[in-house]
Each structure stands twice: as structure tokens, then as C-alpha cells.
Length: 356
Image (tube, rainbow, N blue to C red; front, side, top):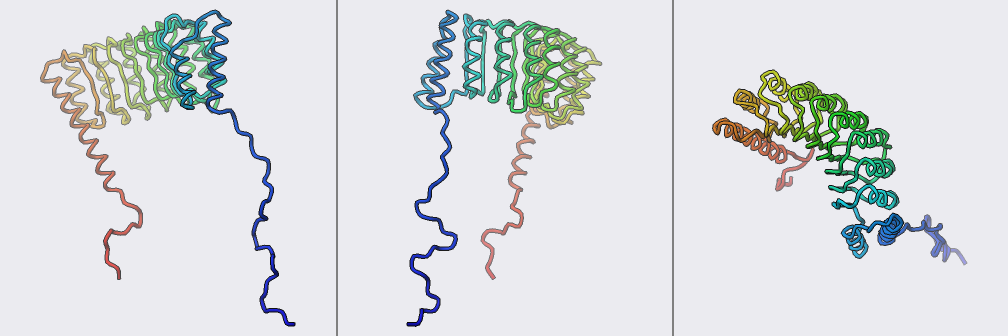
């Protein structure tokens, strides 16, 4: 009997088809769940506190327990307890290091001292998740700044630290020199706050050289409530034109004074720098001549959309500065809207066009 032309053998395999029920390779084992990681974090912290004979911080335990219930990672840790001290930090460091999911760590008025900062540096040298570190009012001296500077200087590539806040620590010129010497080689830091740290003109010069002169990542520098004076201000002004990243500069309450040469150097620097948009000179007695100088600057440097000066200036001059800042801000908003509305897709067709 003749075969059918082009007939296929019954049950033949389809080209490129897969065999039904084929065995797959070994599946990859899943890691610990969020719940398990947090449970381990809590257990380790409590055990270390018990060994050191100190009570664990109850708000922190409640936060961990809440995140366990929701099965959400703990990305922010805040402690504000004067009794915490260096021992409390020593108990927190190993669980933090093992967990390594915290992005923001805030230790406010914890009485850490230099010993606590030394313990914390063990965590800083290992974490790959931390983005923001705030150590407000922790009695950090130049010794503690030395620990921080050396640790931050040798951070490895995966480190993410972008914000460092050390306000209200009395480390002064010696401390800021040690700190900024270490920071100058970091490649991630964007925000640095050193408010009310008893920094004088020598410290201001160190900040200018190590931060503004060497770091092309720093976007926000806040030095309010220090004593950098005219020498520190001139040093900062000298480095501003070459820094293309800085957007916000806070020099409020720094005994800058009304010296014409100092204010002239700052004015020239602000005109030359094209990245700054926010400047704070409040609580500095810059005088009428100095304020007039900056009012004229704002009409030329329209990219500056925030500029704060003392309210003790003559009303007319103070309001003129405010109006110019408002005009700069409005122009910036209008410019952004115009750019957004003017964008079209390349090769795009007009909607509703006729068909041929």
C-alpha cells in the first residue's frame, strides 16, 4: 500500500520541543526570611545587653517587633537615650553588622563619647547598606574624629554613605582637620553637616582645602554656628569656583562680619560658581554695603533661588533681596516647565493627522 505523501510518524517529537516532565536542575536554596533576620537581630542585641548588664532600648525592641509582624526590613534605627553610652553602642554594633539592612542610623544625644565612636567604626568599616549617619551631640572630641576619618578614608567600593551629620560635638579645629583629611578620599559623600562644633578659622581653612577643594561629590555643606570668621570665609570662597557639585552652603552665625575684602571675595566666588542655588548668611553682621553687594549679585546669578541674610538689615534692602530671590525662583520654575513642555519624541507624528 503506498505511503501518504508528506505523512508524519505518529508520536514523533516536535522540532525544538521539550520533553514533558523533564527534570530541572537543583533549585537554589532561599535565604533567611525578613522575619528570621529581624528575630536574629533582636536576639543578638538582647543577649549582648544582658552580658553587659545594661537594659536594651525598649523603643528599638518595639520597632524591631513591629517590623517582624509586618515582615518589613528595618531600614532606619534611631536611638535618643543619654544612658545608652559607649557600652550600648558596643552591644548594638555586632547585630547591626550581621543584619546589614539599615540605611539610616541616628544616634542623638546618646553620650557615645570617643569610645562609642571607636566601636561604631567597626560597623562603618563593614556595612554596605548605610547611606545616612547622624551623631548629634555625642561628646565627640578630636580623638573620635580621628577614628571616623581613618575609617571613612578606607571605605570599600560597596559603601553607600552619602550623608554625615555631626552637629553639636565640640571637636573644634583639631577634630575637623582629622575628619576632613579622611573624607577627602571618599567618593560617595554628598551632605556634610558640622553645625555648632566650635570650628574656628583654622578649621574653616581645612574644610575648604579637604572638602571643597578635593571632593567633587559634596552637594550640601552646613557650618552654622561656628567661628570660621574672615580667614575661613576667604578660604572657602577661594575653592568655590572650581567645585561643580556644591548646591547648598550654610555659613550662618560664623562671625563673618562686614569686612569689604572678605565679602568681596565671597561675592566673586558666588558669581563664578554656577552650581550653588542655596546660600545662608543669616546671623552674620555683613552691614549695608555687604548686603547691597549681594543684592546686586542676585540680579546676575539668577540660579540662586534661596539666599538668607539677617532680618536686622534695613527693611527696604532686606525686602529687595527677598524679591530678587523670588524672581529667580519663579524664572527657574518657568524655565523647567518650558523645557518639559517642549520635549517631543524623535520622529513622532502629530496626533490626528490625515491618512493618505
